[in-house]
Length: 268
Length: 268
DNA sequence: CAACGATGCACGCTATGCGTACTTTTCGAA
DNA sequence: TTCGAAAAGTACGCATAGCGTGCATCGTTG
Image (cartoon, rainbow over all chains, first blue to last red):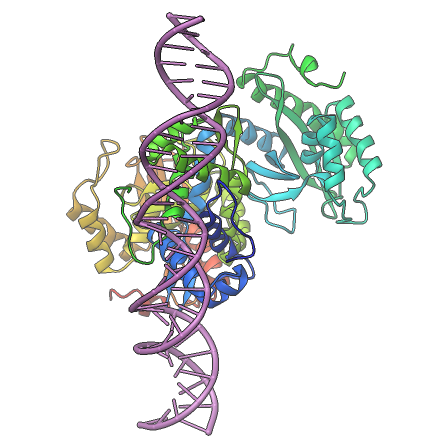
């Protein structure tokens, strides 16, 4: 039997099916069956069964001996979007924000120790990596990640700092856990986060929290620009106010009244 | 045993796992285990096992008795994006197109009988439905669908017309198979498609084909606007030329030389 | 406090999914 | 064209993964 082993209340075949689907990646654009078997560590007949199943469901297709993903894979995410009222609701706010600032606007949530973009209006190509909905970035080096961590609660922060290696992604990246902890405290105090070139050189972004009815921070709203465009001083004064107003609008639609936030922060 | 039954080379548990994941939708935002069991037709213990598996993989989470999807579901689509060079490559073209026209720009592919948005730059909220990457719309009532069908080959068109019910989505929707066939012929001849209010009242869009190295049409590029904004006459003259130039740019990056397209259309 | 409705859990059965071994096909080199 | 190697496809028997029934447990409501 496979090394990953069997456990109670765990469906092995489902995990294996996902392993095959997710094996398709930048380094495996159109793999053969055997290549997938090697990458996933499964036997060839097993991979074949899973591939044929995925094919019948419409997620993969084969051209001769090579297999590839179909655009239906993109549609899986629709089910997430459809279950979160916030996403559709925030779309006009993001559009307005992008228009007023002339910069890309993003909404993101925390998933494990990473930040996931859940809605986005791109404006200019500033990052070398292609940021789209579903993109994951490390929380510690982004303004949205700082915001989400800052209000995630003290024990969550401690756990995060224990689990996560703060790799220097640029020379500016904060890599000291204690330094990061201080930064998060500052974010909580001032109510927003600015990160300058810690994820990627020349990329500046500012983020603010979005709250739901209970006052809990459920997302981060951000505006990003390239370093040359604006001095960071100016970003602070002009953009932060606009971000805070936009986030207040989204939060209000989620049922957040201005009263409840202090009580629910759990810090003060 | 379940009615769907067992077949050779088909992994039942994988299909069932997807059924549970996809059961989360607008009408099932935060279901209980029992609700999921009812919707999927599976036994409660089976759903529980599948849910626990999905939870361990990070795709679902439970708050008390209720379950919900996590943003990780959105990240599945990244694997599709990562395997298709066209998507990242076309991003700057879409941004430029949106900026020059002041309208939303989209790239879509055909998946079965539906069109899937695979890249998009939104500008204004013109449609009542929220169009995002991964959104599916019927091919027959959209300009992108018409383009993709037009160059899909005669037997594909025939099969499409046999399989698909052309439901009237607005009073303007073309619902006659023969009429649609004629429209597709026109699209092939003129090299672009315009659809006015057939998917949704007040929505006009124009689309052109994008070709790969072999000359095959692999995607459709479109610009959409609301009916009030521009008379459709003006859309034709100004936007179509810009679309054709943009599509030529993307096609060229895919290795398409201007020579090969006629030979590969398979019609003339 | 009872009764209902829901989830969680235990357990024994069997069909499902497994991998080994073999055949067929494909493709490239001689 | 022939040969040979590498990969995909197939068959098959075994084991176990996954199944559903049935019961215990929890919590909510009347």
